[in-house]
Length: 116
Image 1 (cartoon, rainbow, N blue to C red):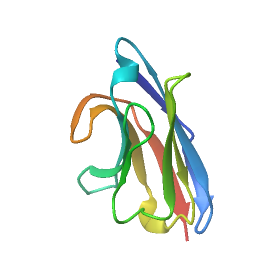
Image 2: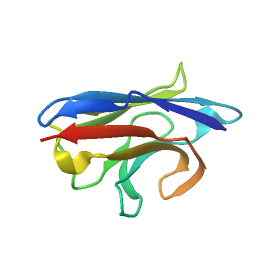
Image 3: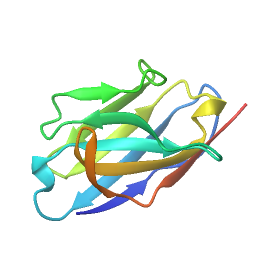
Image 4: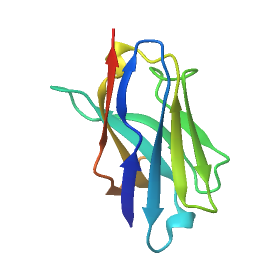
């Protein structure tokens, strides 16, 4: 499975941004997709996950209520709507393909910078 992430950029604190990840390959529709992020000098951390149907989602506590993950099964894409962004959300965001907690493929990452 190949993943192509897009949508990163520079946004002011309190602003919004939507990331997208397009997946291609075999069995894409059978597995979930997730978003992770890695800030400079920190380890990669989980952000959100959506299951294969789009009906079940998981979020890190740090983004609950601000971020929304969704899936378009017809297009094999997953979006991450990010609202009320904070400077601490600044990171490279990666999309991933697989089951919750067991990801098989990773995208190349897209940079999100939130200015204060």
